Amino acid sequence: MPGKTPSRKKLPAEMISMLELRESPAILLDRHYRIHAANRAYQRIYGDGESLVNRYCYEVSHHYKVPCDQVGESCPLQACLKSETTQRVLHVHHTPRGEEHVDVETSPLLDEKGDVELLLEVMRQTRVASALPTDQGLVGKSPRFNRMLELVQRVAPTGTPVLLLGETGTGKELVARAIHDFSPRNPGPFVPVECSGLTETLFESELFGHEKGAFTGAQYRKDGLVDAARGGTLFLDEVGDIPLSMQVKLLRVLETGTFRRVGSVDAQQVDFRLVCATHRKLWDMVAAGTFREDLYYRISMFPIHLPALRERIQDLPVLIETLLARIDSPRRLRMHADTLACLQVYAFPGNVRELRNILERAVIMTDGDVILPEHLPEHLLCAEKGVSGKGASGEIMTLEEMERRYLRQVMAQFQGDRHDLARQLGVSDRTLYRKLNALR
Image 1 (cartoon, rainbow, N blue to C red):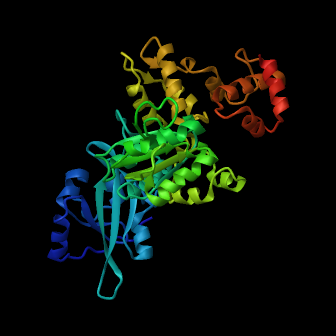
Image 2: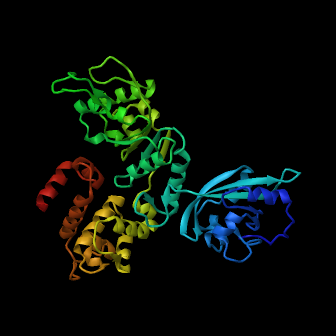
Image 3: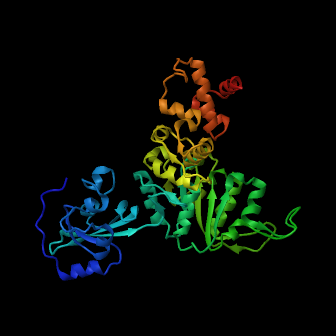
């Protein structure tokens, strides 16, 4: 908690002028979180008609009763006092438009003895994502989401290659597009490539293009996706699925900055920013010899982990409202509190993509304007009740029946192959095959 309220000193005129020269909201703070001065931009956005001087910054911008580091957020003021250097964090602040993501930069102002006398805090609104429902782009405000967003905001203006890591359905293409949109290359094209859909024979031709007559059926010259991304961003989704024999060709492009169309001897210069994504554990693949170590280091210069939906369950209400607005429906549906409670205890193995599928089904099943628990899939109703071992009528289920229901639920959600599923279930391939046959 803050200490004793310090006496407010008269600030030099040049300090006040320094604040007013800034277009972004800016304040001067002491080490006890007290505001000593605020520019007009800050007063316009965060003011409530009362004087802001001598009030706590977290009270004004966050509407908190305690400092932000006591409610799970990073506090730039504390980090600045500790390091005596400028610190930046991404926070969610309250504004007249509602909650918004804000890039907070805090710098120390030293006295004649070299001690921190005051701190200058500047707030810049970020458009990379929204904390409120929106018709496009990234949505969220949970701490895990904000930490991911902070990395996106830092790396987007650079040309550094980015590797997006996360489970299937976490929105890796949306994040890749945000990196492109907020980079200097945003006037150029954003070219997504689904690597898992490219066979070894198609990979080179699709990526690099080919000359007329390069192979049977090549009746004209074709530009590849690398050429299509010229001046923009090339997004390689599921880069871990690129065949080992093709990885060396991609590595050569990244190392030399050139490529050749199939059937051509002329080298072409590349001009793209690379963003890759995968749900696989690439380093484990390197250790297993199925992914090149040199390529791994080329693409993993700036890794960003995308949190699973179960790690940012606080975002569920805003995600639901956003997705319902994006689903094509003549009705404006809302979710019953019991339905939301049911979803909040579900693990979402398919993440945001699965949530959208659940909502699309619910829109079809709903006759009125309110989505009720019975409009959700059956396995979600089981999640709401917990593992009670009871059927719909309350009778105790047999272990055999519980196993059958569990396997149906897993098979409906699991997106890997049967070997991976058997390994995760802790049974042999043969045992899983036998149990699935029994289900049929």
